Length: 433
Image (cartoon, rainbow, N blue to C red; front, side):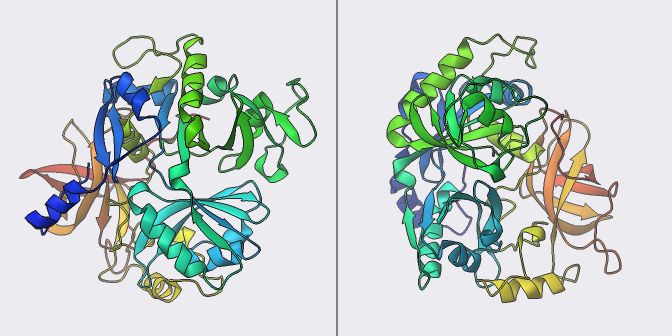
């Protein structure tokens, strides 16, 4: 949940509280299921249904279903769409093949991150840009301004859309009874392994549901039909598990959610949860589990690892910046930052792991031999690993060797007490292959 900034006045806090808080098309479904809600990015979203731990373990061991309809959807279409997005964003979107997706960012002129995004190439001259909920209006406005002069149109379609995610080892199994068919776009598909399965004939250039689910690549998306509804089916997610995201019309969301949950209820239960009870095939999950899952997977959260005061290089995500492409917004500042890597005043996002049960939280100070070297951006007691984990923005380890070596011992101040943590490789968790 977002906290008020320390400098916020009483009047601005009241104005913030009085702003319109939206509900997703699935709000009534969550309320009927007993969800606890929280205000997130201007939306009333399910925080949890029962237990954060049960929901977390369900995604790791079986599957979870999430309502992500608070996320934005901005459509960019036209013959100049690819060139416009190359200019507007740090990545080379013109190189994204039809049916594929790319993680990227939009930055300010000074290189600070306005938002991190996923861009899907969904048509010959059509792209879908997905920003975070709280940044949607800012990103849409920036895209309109930055795409002016290019032969394309920018449309914020967020309030007409819903987004449902099914994540976990059983996600493909669950959706086999829901996805009817999908477009057979070559770049989006893995090669068929072994003899082709007899999944039926769904027509020319169209694959039947089981085939499209089995062959869809990671970070790929195709137009599909699910329970009779037209959707965009993407193999993307924010949990570190295999899974799918289903973009649909807002008017179709309740029926689609109901069909998915109903189909999963007929499947046999799977592994035990943390309490020794058999896990159902599918568990509704809220934002609390989504946050713990993404942190274990080492994925950044806007407002924590990413802000307008951090650049992609600060967040150890410089690989998403394509300095070799023609001029784009923020390029000069990012090129200067890249050239200063490791110098005084720069920072890097570092993964830390501890022992015991006491977790460092965002804002905790990190020390090296008594000297302050940085700040925790996110931290928790990992439900999967059983020990504390955290991400931290740290200054360079030394002028000679700026990269922090794995195994380096650091100290973190947690409410006045110091706890040891060590530098580790990210992500903290990798799903079994």
